[in-house]
Each structure stands twice: as C-alpha cells, then as structure tokens.
Length: 409
Image (cartoon, rainbow, N blue to C red):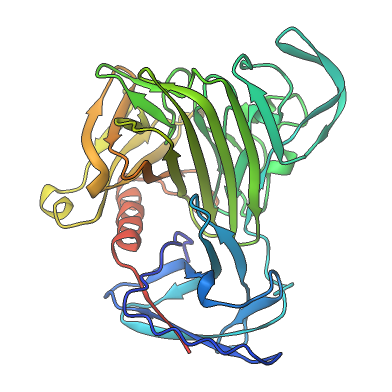
C-alpha cells in the first residue's frame, strides 16, 4: 500500500469530553472519514487544550491492539497538538482508538530531522578548514555574510525526511530547497554527507540528491516576487535555525530570517517546515512581522518537464489547488514529478519567470502556508509515469480538501 498522507483534522462539530482524572483511564477517539474515498497514512491532529496529557506518556491503540505513538508538536503560532498516525481510513468509515499510557516502542521511526556541522577546524575567511568529525546540535545561527560551500554544515543546511523522501535547504544566501530521492524506507540522513562531503550527488544504495537547483527555487523555496522575477531570501542580517521536533511521526525545521529585505521592506520572517510519516509532501508555514505582499514559491523549469494544472472546473470548487511538473527532469535523468499545493484564498496569481513556475501568495495577518511534493521513478515506491503522478496529485488534493471528523469521548 502506498503511504501518502497526513494532515489537518476538521474540528467543527466535534464533541470533546475528556476525563483523564484517574491513572490508566482509556480515552476513546473516533475518527470518521466522510468522503467517499480512502485516505491512507493520515495523521490525526487534536488541539492540546482538549487534553491533559504528559509528554511521551501516552499512545493510541487501535481496535486490533496495534500501538501507535502519540506525539506532542506545535505549529508556527505555538499551538500545541497531539498527533498519531492512521494507516488507512476507508471511505465513509469510522475507526475507534483508545488513548492509554505507554510509548509504542515497537512502532518504527518514520520521520527525522537534523542540523549538523563540523568540529575540530576553524574558519579561514569564508571557508572552514580542517576538522575531524561532525556534531549534531540541531541548532545553529549564521550571520548574513555566511556563504555557500563553506564546508562547515553537513550537506550545507538542515535536513528532514519521512520514510518516503528526504529534503534539505541551504542555510546560506541561496536559501533553496533540494530533494533527496530514497530507494529505502529507512532513515538515511544521518549517513548523508559525512564522506566526501557532497558525495550524495552520486547514486548510492539509499538513493541520491536528485535535483539540480542552481539559481532557481528548486521545489518550494521561499521567495518574494518583484514584478519580474522571484528573489530568494538572500539579503538578511542573520539566520537562526533549529529542530523543534524529531519524532517517529513528525519532524520539523524552524528557521528565523532576521532583517530580511523583502522588496525594500525590512522584516523578520519565520519558517516552519513539517513532514509526516508516510508522506512525500512537506508543509511550509511562514509568518512575517511586517506587511509584506507577494510572498512566492514555485518549481524549477525544465525543458524536459510538462507543466500540469488542475482542470479549471475542479479548481474553482476547492480550497486547495496546485501547480506541478512531470518529466525526465531529475539529476539522474529519471522521471520526476514536482508539485506545490497552495490555498486558493491566499493565491494572488500563478506566474512564471525565466527559471521557475511560480505561485504568488498574499499573507493573511502575516501568515501563509503551502505544501511541496516530489516523486521519483527510482523511489522505493516509484512513480514512473504521468498517470501515477496525477494519482498522487489527486490523493494529496483530496486530503487537503476533505477533512475528517474527530470525536473524543
């Protein structure tokens, strides 16, 4: 079964009755899929104000006795949520889960995030020389003068992955997102970039860096539209980055760009990237502390890839939509699909520049969000042709536009 899901729980009309007054009391959670089609690898989210749970002390147990990890995470606004994974929600069906004390130790780790750098050497100008090992503090601040190919940060920035795909972005003036294709569901990023520094550009048993970003937005990078082209987050005073979550179900990367020059507006920009078990897509949340319009993201252009847009009659009826490309556009010259999903109520325009297909967005109260998703024909669950890619697009769009109902008893 293909693992491609997650996402947000519709909490309208939810009955919330929590009685965890005594130790060992089993809380019932009913999850109902009211759409006519199945949702696979769905991540249930419930606001923590509806719970009184100690962190890492509880798990969700299915009717068959399967133990699922229940993790506590937060969104970019600091709203804390309890989450747990569901392999499949058949169409028009309900599932009942019990929240019990425990830690679901037998459940595998299916998400990961890290931020690591060298030690033992020193900077000689912009380059880091020497060094004998790596450390993973999962937190780092660099100033605005920090540049690419400093040979200091492992694969040049933070990395995050699910069992389906891996990502990184450059923690330097490029600030672009790159993709690691995975030929295994196992966690691979701890082993990437530690021998030969950039050997991940070559095929390995686990997969490879399968996108050449260059001066483009790659996939899902943050930018500002200046009327002519998309400008990445290049001019900033400093950048602070850390890993707020590294769970079995969800991994996150939080970044603050201090003093970003966004079309002449000096502001601070926060970015929270999240990925869930079983999912190819990353969720990008952005929050800016000044009035900034025209926040932009997109997909690298390729002469070998076809632009795909949803049918207009379907697009007008949905809360979420997308732009996508598919073709022989991977670094390894394989079939690769790339997609950005955006909220229709935040869309200003779908556009392009010389290098990218673009989505220009208007923040609401300084907030904007989108998802970005790659596929690869050499993935361990491969997407080899356009028909299979379009199915991935439809599955993702269905999850975003059809929330489930959660009832807590």
